[in-house]
Amino acid sequence: MIQAEPSFRESVDLMFNRAVALMDLPPGLEEKIRVCNATYTVRFGVRLRGQVHTFTGYRSVHSEHMEPVKGGIRYAPEVNQDEVEALAALMTYKCALVEAPFGGSKGGLCINPRDFEEHELEQITRRFAYELAKRDLIHPAQNVPAPDMGTGEREMAWIADQYARMNTTDINARACVTGKPPNAGGIAGRVEATGRGVQYALREFFRHPDDVKVAKLKGTLDGKRIIVQGLGNVGYHAAKFLSEEDGALITGIIERDGALFNPKGINVQEVRNWITRHGGVTGFPDATHSAEGAAVLEEECDILIPAALEGVISIENAARIRAPLIIEAANGPITAGADQILREKGTVVIPDLYANAGGVTVSYFEWVKNLSHIRFGRLQRRQEEARHQLVVDELERLDRYLGDAWSMTPDFKQKYLRGADELELVRSGLDDTMRTAYQSMSEMWHSRDDVTDLRTAGFIVAIDRVASSYRAKGI
Image (cartoon, rainbow, N blue to C red; front, side, top):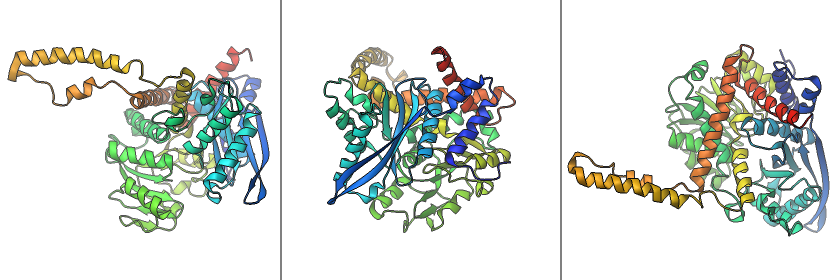
């Protein structure tokens, strides 16, 4: 039994160790996969408000079994080297699990974005990008960042523009970073991608009756009670899609200033609008507010979605978590100690290295789009529509011939004639990726008696793929 609470980095190492103990890897290769290849610390000054402010940033490269390496940049005051290296390791395993052709990387800047005006953040971001790019830590073929906690489309656009200014003849400059706005080389569906991936992950889980049975649940997502911790980009989109498209009931929402709870369900969009206007959930009229938000994690529900910071479910509260199914929309929300407690009590955990891989999957699509210099659907959409028109014309001829004996469904023609646009193709690719990755985990979970949970199964699948890449390189 793990007695002391491990750090986030220790948690990642412990989960790695559990998986490799069940694998037959040479000790040298095991160590090569485990260690972080390099971490660069940059300290730079920016003149703001009449004086020079010094900032500290990190970019960690965990594994270069495939290149470029991929991983987000987060802005948070508590960013540190251990956290960045642990997140880079998770990126390696995440990319391997969903078969995105990247190594793992991560970046961070010790800053609270709320302390600065927009023009100041732009100055800081551009200087940080300059410091990384001149060391090839931002490069379309070597290291491709993306948004993370505290950053978004705006920051990615600044980074992409800064790289392009430094590399004026690089035709692939836009591929130096993903998560950009659509008008700056981004891709449709990227903002919602991680939350959409959580939805697709849960849908795939409920397609496996044996897995659902292990979680002591039954049926489909329809009517399932869900508590979401963190209504940021990921939590908001996951909760919105699950409630509006799958019939789930969002009974609890936990935010920085407390939590909302309503067993009859909460309107996610109304809460989001309230937070935008008031800065928090306090005072929202259609739910009970609790100042002690963490306590709502322990409320009875069917599915718990931690979608904010790491370590929110720890040794201290794991035994009191009543959700039979937890899906990790955030990175590392369950510590290794808590994970052990949850396994022993039979809780099924859909792990972060799979559950929140929607972001890097759609980032992969954006990177490919930037390198190919053409949006998805541009070549084939109208050709699809023309081919479908042939079928519709023939059906309409049949309709006229048979009269009242047969007719097309009223909206069939409209739906069938419309060729897939970029957003539909992105969602299709994401859905396929999440389905295939879950199936590989589930198969590993059920094919071996010594693999007792999805996290271990996911790590084994991912580590085996990384090992295969290194062997192919001759390592």
